[in-house]
Length: 358
Image (cartoon, rainbow, N blue to C red):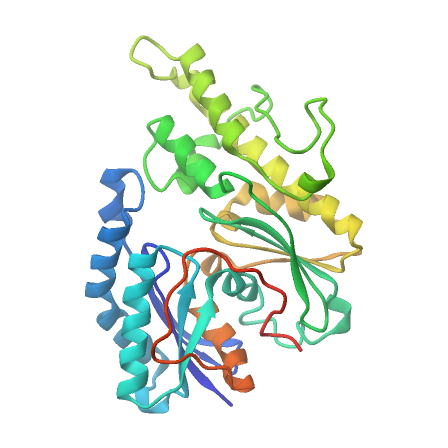
């Protein structure tokens, strides 16, 4: 048995959650900062940190209250240690250190990236991770900061097959929305704007897929690139915009639908190629962009029947603390704790093992 308080502050969501035994989410409280960052068209790290300072107490109290427990019932405090925005991470880590020290609880530093993968197994994933039929497992983590393919074996061995060599898919959607004047956050707005649009009207590039007639180099077989898609959108707008630099309404939907289609096509095509190459038995799709309905529908339609497809529930796709509390339980049961002088880290470190296996 283990009751873990998870805390998350890697970007612009302040979150707290109580998770029992790694899978049962008793509460999942999130305070969004969208309204604060929208006027800037993106997340401002220093502003995010200040908002975390204000939100952590009430969010944590709400999570404990919803779960029907107190800090005395908690067995350990798990917090996102990285990767993410350092100013935001430091607030969460400092808050977690204070709680852990004040209530004499073990402190767990969790990897946000692995949390996204683990989030696909919350609530109903108990037993799936322990099954041999699940492996090898291929995880696509796709968000504003990450676009990565990770291969995970039954014994917990892991390796990153590929990642973005420039922009993440979520960033491409956010920057596309900003370029088109649609607002923030870009992903949900782009999806809504694309509804009813013709996704085949404009042919945006599919970088690093070999579709442009240029042979794909072996080292980029599983890598992603989205900067070229953004550049193509910039020139598309210049070529089709009116005198005020705005796309006519009749072109906007088709443009957004075509742009979104290019991003989705690359993600699905690369993932299924890697799944075939490594003969995987399970594909996990997680991260904020995994909320996208077109992406989810495409994976459901094209994933071979012999492969299990696990799409993280939408509530566990965007940044949340349930995935941190769930992942933290595996650290807890193995006795892997963080010291009080633990520091945050901005970039994803090399991962060779996952804590929820082996």
